[in-house]
Amino acid sequence: MPAGLLGLIPVRRPAQVNRNPRLVKERKRLQLLKTLWRYWIGLVAPSLVVVALFLWLAPPQHNPFVPLDLNHKPGLASHFKMTQLERHPAACFDALDATGVLYTMLEDSPPGEACGKYDALTLDRSLTPYSATLSMTCGQTASLYLWERHVARPAAVEIFGSPVARIETYGSFSCRNIAGTGRKSEHARANAIDISGFRLEDGRLINVETHWDNGGPEGEFLKRVHKGACRLFSVTLGPDYNKAHADHLHFDMGDRRTCR
Image 1 (cartoon, one colour):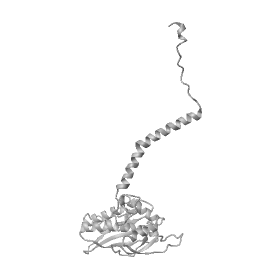
Image 2 (spheres, one colour):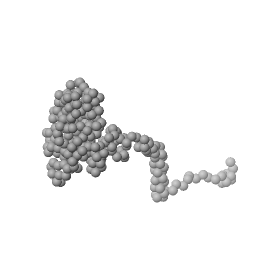
Image 3 (cartoon, helix red, strand yellow):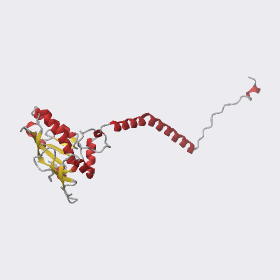
């Protein structure tokens, strides 16, 4: 090409990059927002739709935002709702009132005592009589009612063809430590119960110490009521836990979560 024409051809120069720190920072922020928006559209939004559909269509016992009805069968959200009743005594007593359970409210113990009863009651009448007078927190009583109505009573009829006439218990409130420790038991807060057996209407006695490992219908029944309790109480302990529980089932609504 003639040298004279070279000067007529435009020369492409590298694009000017703005190195202004403020503008560079703004571009990065916009890029991050675009990435987050794509993430929201692709993952978060569909997940929210699924959750919303679940809460709309799920039965009330599976929905954590629907108030607990103790007459409904336990569901996915039942234990969560039970723990909320522990924190909201007025709602707990309302839930108990809706069941027809009869009770006498107890005055709170003075604050600071090593053992005491708070938001507690004496159980006067439930669906099934108990062999001892029970003084428990409202939350513990509500969980016990759920277990009694939806676990123990149906299991007895299904397995033995006879309803439960009485539940044998070692009691609820007791100012004592956990065996072998210096830590107070949930019994010291009226937040636990020990079940030793079940008397059926046909006269049979199902005893935890005698029948837990016998492999017959009695053992099947005890394992079923133990497993059902694990879904409702915070702590469920039986003979497989240790020797201290060889003769009873322990249920409580403490802060731990244990099924043994």
